[in-house]
Image (cartoon, rainbow, N blue to C red):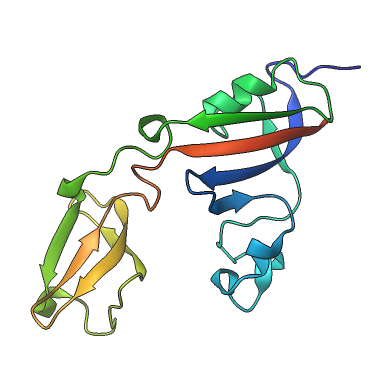
Length: 166
């Protein structure tokens, strides 16, 4: 049976979980993907952005399209084989950095946006770079934003299966 090698284009299924078992990303159809987190369109909506894609992901091994640990783990696997890897926070989405939490005075916040806790926004810094932030607190005086990745500080585990070598 053929084994995947560096440079091969492959299709994989995976499920990413946090230490408490919460599924944060998967290519499999499952109950989490039918939750309210996915909105009215469910995961069949290409713009869903709920972290629950349906159907195998295609990638080229060694091209850094996914986590290095998974791409390296695919080498030598045959279709149908499964593996599990835990990726420490610092190698996944980074450690949580308190310095990336900051407040903006309410009068500097755009008038056409009503901030709500949990809302995700994109700011542009002085160099013109986009920065994704999450609203973590709203008061009459200001809005507190967190520029950490939502999974920063989390060790993540992926269970993955090589579906096919393309």
